[in-house]
Image (tube, rainbow, N blue to C red; front, side, top):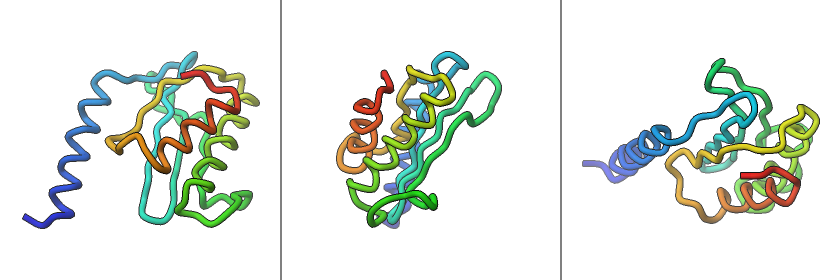
Length: 119
């Protein structure tokens, strides 16, 4: 089997296991991230309504730095937390979406925590 196909299957299996335990509500939405090779995306989701409340990514016009590194991921986390504060959200549940908690994923989460989100 192709190595990349196997990696995608493993991530999907981890993602399903995480989603069994993690669900977002209006009071405490789910902070879901997606990490591609060049960019990182994050959004706050209310799973009861199936709606996205707030979103930020390294592709936004107000994004700082070079996309694809930990500095831009930290910028996305802090911008997401600022948007969440404006929407009246202070606590979230973290959904790493099957990605390992290190590097850009960890930088985004740490920056969101420093900007005031609780999870």
